[in-house]
Image (tube, rainbow, N blue to C red; front, side, top):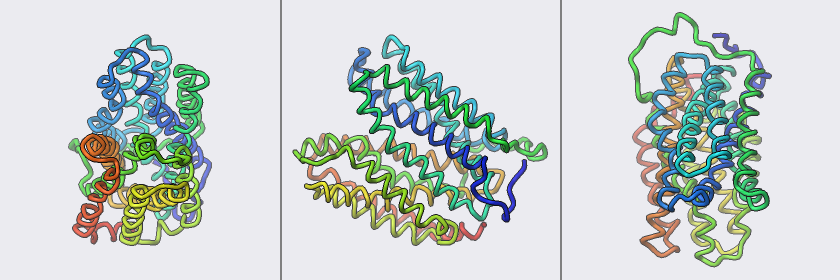
Length: 392
């Protein structure tokens, strides 16, 4: 495989194209998430079955991550990204043409398979396209693309479907998946493993050195995805007169500024300072959401989330790459995303349990339980995590 040397530039044509493709792919998936529940019920699904349809992608992801990780370390990253993109396109196009909720579940499963392949192999692909001493910086900007897609896509889809309906709105998601497939055709370095390295080796479920990183990203992701799922109903239950639709746009804007300002620091600062900063910021935004009454407090909470989840997401992603042997970077990527899948699933579940068993005022204070768990995992593994940067 052709790999860049440390003297080569970080943002080559191939790197920019992979980042753009990642944006289109993530936009396609995040665009559909707010629509699937209502669309499934419109097609005749019960509330319970609609919930199963919504959660199918995360369920598929958790089971298929290890397979995707092992495949990524054995085959061309381009080939796997192409297959994943095509599966995503087929799945989303199926949403548009399906006549009933049963087939919607099937197409959701197909979309989930594409999601797993693309998230794992494109992260690994990027790590091969940049000098290893700049993996942190590259992952930071890669994270920007994902964060912007995750923030803008739901805002666009929620507003658009009210004008043109579910099927018309979902066409945009299908086009975005198609753009991802087209974009990767222009990447020159397709990250084909060297023949000598394509030897048989034991199938592994997870990359051992990346387990602490996966646990940490799962904990940080839980309140993030609980907020993504429930912030609208949370503000309605508290009868708050705030512009809640701007929450994730503020988050994305602050995150963009943070990463532009700190881009070189991701390759020089050890894991510990990032972890402590993000933990404090997470506690801050959970408290701000708990006491929120005005748009100013909402904006502060969104900014706190950018310093919390927004920063640690990229730090954990790059740390997983640094800790893993070169031949297991795909497996490390799948282990990282497995942690993200767990957080993505448990966050809304935890939010639902809190909402159904406690007064709404306890929704965010209860989530502060993740703070001591984060610190416990970090201090138990701090030597390994802090020395990851020495692998440059």
